[in-house]
Each structure stands twice: as structure tokens, then as C-alpha cells.
Image (cartoon, rainbow over all chains, first blue to last red; front, side):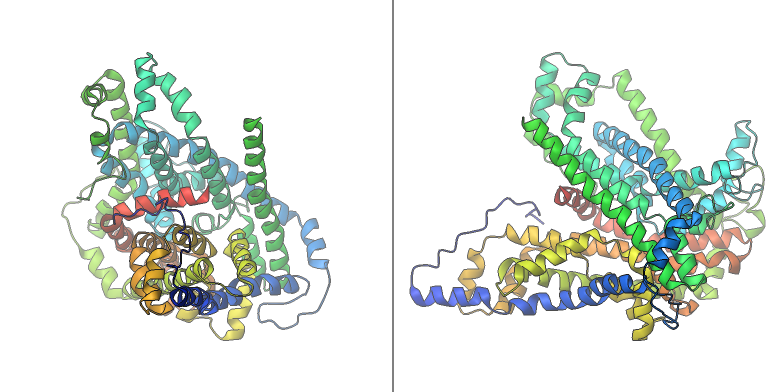
Length: 319
Length: 299
């Protein structure tokens, strides 16, 4: 409880105590049983991550169905087909579009809520409870809740609220192509903004108070302090939040599957759902894994580009 | 929510005894009142869906579809809850989720802590290479592996079993990374003293390292529990038998089985959501600190 995870204790030197026998005991002890400690993890890791990763490549080169039967080697045909498949491109586009639409509000709202909670710290438990707690709910709970809030027009909360302020109810929240993706995005923002909120809140609390006090003595107003102290000091956190958010958003599946099933007219179907449809309902496992490796390439690009960018920025700053 | 102490807000006033900042915090300028109003509106907006689910679940079924909306029915009743409970499905899914999440959490904490300790504190041939291989795994999103992993489960006969759900969630490279970072900061002298006193490797691990690491282990455990409890895609793929489903997967089937009985649907959502809200209430501080730490570890 008292030690924090970030205790900056340097790794101690091996002093050994000077006496040869003790030193030998210690040295032998350090090298003892090493493999035994890592073996259980490595076994599970090899079986359920490394092996599927490798065997999936093999699988993507075959015409395999769901039972593993009928797998014939067909080379890169699956990849060639996937690149020509308009449904791959449309579901990739839906995935990217969802990521664009959801990332901006999730990062901005996360920051905004954290700033509010930081400045109104008297009842911080209330802000944390209301903005973070939804993040802990299973997607099944969140999606069913929103489904019944927005779907049935005789009963849905959203339409009733619209009606109560004199607006026209009966918007096709999920049935209308114009609103379906936005409804999924709104659900996601409500559900997951709490994570970014807490990351930002922790970063805000780590900013030393004396910076603000000094600025205040110099006569800097609230807006000035926000622009010239808070936001620049949050740059690293923002970079982190942004990458985590983009990677999380690219993996969208649950909300769409549970709320729209990918519709209307496949307008919300993300790439993971296309993989699922090809592999698990269309029984084309080989093709499904080829599509998922194309998706994997996209994710790898995003996760590799960010460190490169931030390193370049750091180098520029150092000049 | 009694433990409302935050990461740093408790010690902060002691550290900044300057009169100006303390008095500034207490004055209610117009700007602060506006901020408070905005925050309260947003809180209401965020709590609205939860309040609505709770209110609907406590109504008699006949009154759930009334327009205009009424928050409280003619009477408050737990009928919907007892019906959901009696039907057995939600109870069954709750037990499955609890079993799977607890097993996954225990196994993850154990294997990841052991591996992290092995990587930081022991020496064996290929150690650096293996650690690099584990770190590379952070890049692999499990969602990408669903097709080959499913085939493997078919071959191993693990479809529709608890182990089929649990095992692929156990080896989490990111958790090893977090634990390695922690172990690197623990001074070696404690362990060396124990070695000289004749303690073996295992005793040192169990009686010195593990107790010292309780805060990180708690964070890893809580995160594993939350993500396992809420995981949808993998359990959804690997279980077809309704009796073996986890709560999130079972709920996805609820629509068809409940028809339009809104009170019962909302009651089942409340039942499904409560366990993690309780976890939050109990472990608020660890969760907040854990997320903050995840953020730091990511940099």
C-alpha cells in the first residue's frame, strides 16, 4: 500500500559482502531456476499467441473451411481476392471512419472532463463514479441498454427526451444510414471516455502546484495558465491517449455487432465483423485469416508510426 | 464510495500550505460556478442511462412502455428480478463469468509474475532473446488471431469448455512488461541477504518478492479481472452451448429470449453490471492508480 509502483529505487549493485563463500552462494542463487520461472508463461504464450500467429499465415494460404478440412494450398490467392474484394475495403473504411469519429470526442472529452474534475476536486468521487463507472460495464450491458434507449420509438428514452423538448421523435437511430454510425459512436463515447478521463486526471495531478502559483503571481489568467502550462505539460499524455485510443477504436466489434449487426446495408460493419462472417458463418477460415492479416498490417503501421513520430518530435525539440 | 481519497488530492493541501491557493479554492467565483454547473449537467447525462435502467427494472412490466415517460411506476417491485433469477440463465452466466474471470486472473498474475521475475532476476541462455520475443507480442492484438486460434481450439477439443475461454487470455505480454518494470526497481540486497541465510529461489520469490509487489500485483489482477469479465468476442466465438456462456455473451442472446419484456431486460442488465461496479467501489484507489501507472508504463 505504501510503496508505489513507480518507486525510483536504482537496481542495487552486487556487493556480495566480500566473503567468498557467501558471494558464491549468491552468484549461484541468481542463476538458479531461471527457465523454470519463465516456462509456464512461455508455454501458454507459445501455444496461444505465437503458434496461432504462425499457423494463421499458413492457413491464409489455403482454402480451408471451419473444420480444418479441405485445406488446399492456394498460395496468395486469398490475399489477391481480398484486395479485389470491395467488402474488405468498405469494412476497412467503416473501421477507419469509426476510429476517426470516435477518437476526437473521446480524447477531447476525456481531457475536458479531467479538467473539470481537477478544478472541482471537492466531490471528485462523484465525477469519477459517473464518468468512469460505465467503462467497467460489459459491452453486452452497454449495447443492450442503448439499444433499448434509442430503438423502440414508443418507449425509448432518447425519443421521449426529444419529444419532451418539442423536437420530432422517431429518428431512425440505428436504421438510418445517416445516424447508425453516429449512434454507435455516441454509445462508445459514453461507455469508454472514463479511461482517458482517468489518464488525464492522473497527469493533471502530477503537475506541480508551484508552476501555477508562480504564473498567478505574474498575473496570468486562467485561460493563459491552461494554454501555456497545462496543455504543454500534457503533451506526452495526449500522445499516449491518442495512440491507445486509435488502437482500441480500430478493434471495434462488440458495439456494432450487438447494436446494428453491421447494418443498415453494411454501412457500419467493421473489418473484424467481416472476418467473423467469412470465417465463422461463411466457413472460409483461410480467407478470413488472410483478411485479418491485412487488418493486422494496418494496426502494426499505426503502432509503429507513433513512436517514430514522437522520436522525431523529440529530436526536433532537442535541436 | 467512502474511500473518496484520490491519488494525490489528500496529501496535496499539506504540501502547499500557501494561503493564496487554499483561499482561491474556496471562493466561488462566477467562473467556478459555471464550471460546476457544466460538470453537474454532464454527470446527469452520464448517469441518466443507468438511472433509467434501474427505474425501468423496478416497474411492473405493464407500465414499462408508457408515454410520456414516467420514472417511477405505480409501485416499486422486484418482480422482474425474481423472474430473471428464476429463469436461471442469468444466474448460470454469472457463475460462468465468475469462474472464468477468477481462474484467468489467478493464472495470469501467477504466470506473468513468475516470468517477469525470471526475466529480471535470473540468468539463463537465451534470456534476452526470449524477453524480446515476449515484448514483440504486445504488438499482436488478440482479435486478429481469431481464425487460427479457433481452429487450434477445435483440434485440442477445447471448444465449449472453460479452458477454451481461459487459456488464450492468460499470457499477456503487457502485464509481464509492467511487472518487469516494477521488479527492476526493487533493490537486490533484500534477496541477496536471504540467499546468504540459506533461503532458496522459491522461498525468496514467495516470501520477499511477491509480498513487496502487492500494489502492482493488485493492479494487474484488477485489470485482468475487468477485461476478462467484459471480454465479448472470444467467449462468443468459442462457446455455442448456452449453459457455458459468460454473462456478456449470454446477454447478447437475451433479446430473443426475453421478447419485449423491458423490465426483465433492464433487470438482467442491472444484475450483469453490478459485480464490476462493486469491484470499483471496493478497489477504487487501486483502479485509479493502476490506470495512472498503465499510462506511465506506456511512455
